[in-house]
Image 1: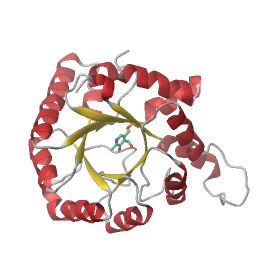
Image 2: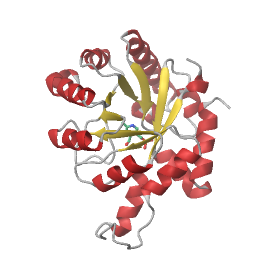
Image 3: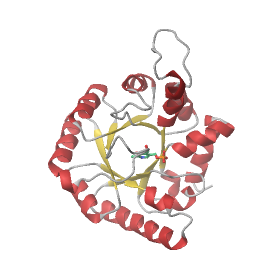
Length: 253
Ligand code: PXP
């Protein structure tokens, strides 16, 4: 697949992080002024060419709130990708909101952001049940995993349509020449195996304006999900410019 056709999903969680820093305890929806609004940013991302909007309503509701997800469901015109922990509570919420896709991620309260890939093989029945329940409701499933053969094979067996390869270890190793090559090779091998097994391959975590040039050379990529770097660049240049610049880099410009 040529890099030109890789899609961009923008993760807007950190817009809500900024809002929560000031307005955590403010009631919303009753005319009170609250900023920044993640839904407004999502619409601006779409206008700038983003092909999807990603959010992760976490168990501790530290950034995106369930009310935000409901509003996004009503307002956005592209695809809503809802990251979620593998819990019955989050599955119930997904079945209520009906995003186009869910991406099942590991979640622990202590982590600052999603740190490792999902253990699919080790909790196979639970993951398979979530994938099936989502499919029955017309929701596509993605599993956020490390590029490890056992997890990729288990993801295919569980019936997931997509995997999202965790690019965090690669991003962390970016300035360590030996390690970076090894992490890059793992991603290439993982993507190749996933494609052989019929999975559609997305990637995300730690992708930024510097490393994206190499990330897009990983074969079989369908979509990149990028959050922190785009929201950070928006502070300098605005969200429109931030999204357009990332799209141009993904297109290999
Ligand atoms: N994909 C998944 C599954 C994630 O959990 C995250 C982080 O929330 C991202 C992509 C985006 O990562 P980043 O904010 O580092 O771009």
